[in-house]
Length: 117
Image (cartoon, rainbow, N blue to C red; front, side, top):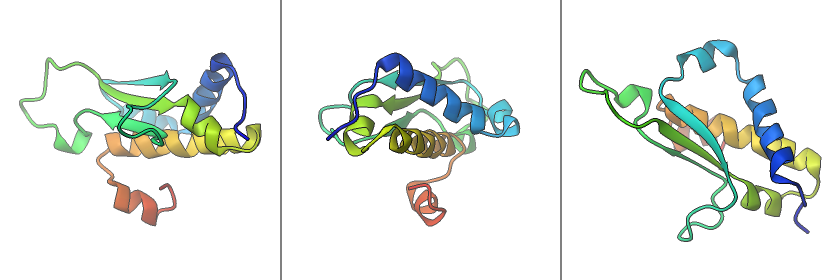
């Protein structure tokens, strides 16, 4: 049975996950916003998070004047796969780290190899 949790509590957990990211990495993040969204796009309903933008490794001399990259953390799919709040805490942390890693240019294959898949 999926976990029931308010959007506010879920947002707190995302904030707590961000607090666990080393400050040196957060300082390197550039032009990116992190959002909590209830549901992913309808064509991928099981998606837990999504990075949309230009990874730091892909930005060249011509990068500028663009909207911020977006990291979306999808609340309902995460709650649906968790058994209790502790599971939600763990899954949110994994998802936040996974999507931040994409901002740094780390692909899914490497993340899976590192245990952050």
